[in-house]
Structure formats: structure tokens, C-alpha cells
Length: 133
Image (tube, rainbow, N blue to C red; front, side):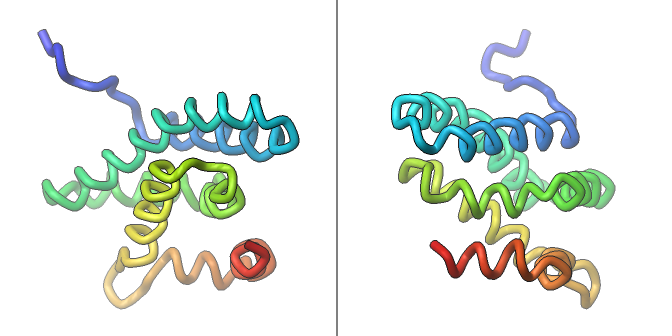
């Protein structure tokens, strides 16, 4: 029996849960009580993604899993949602979100940096969103 083991989720399911959570957090930004509820719910999803990223760094993961996770993040535009949600997150969630973004930005495949390429392909969505904050 695994008493301390977390739920096993695949990268696509985890990214879809995060997209739904961040979307609802951004949509409910006018109502402060709802923002606090959504922010508390986002903690669990954000920690799952951060734990997954840390496992990739510590245990020398398979390239297929890392590539699948990053592909899901790029295809669902999760990076843009994470950037937009930063002002609505509490301190701990901000730290974890920035850590995930930092991990993605430093990720290198050969000589390419896929996250930098992704951000350059969508300058209106990413760079200007950062400048608005």
C-alpha cells in the first residue's frame, strides 16, 4: 500500500487540469472571495506540476515524458495562462509558478531552447503580457 504516494496522473491530464484552473482563476478576478477559493485550489494543481518538473530534474527522466509534458504545455498555451494568473496568486503559488516558468525557459534540446522559440512565436501574448504587469 502506498500511504504517502500521490495520485498518478499523466502529463496531458495534469496540464488540462491546470489550464481549467488558471482560466477560471483569471475569469473570476473581479470577485475577491472567488479568487481566494480558486487560488487555494490552484495550489494543488501547481504543486503537482512543480513536483513533476522537479522529478524530471532530479531523477534523469526519460526524454519522452519531458517532451510530452512540454508539448502539452505549449499546445494548451499554459505559459500564457500562468503569466496572466501571477497577479492573482498568493506568494507560495507565485514562487512555484515562477519556478516552473524558469525550468521551462532553461530547458534545452540540443542547441535549441523550445520555450524561447515558443515565446518568440507569440510575442503579443507573452512579452507584452509580462510588460503589462
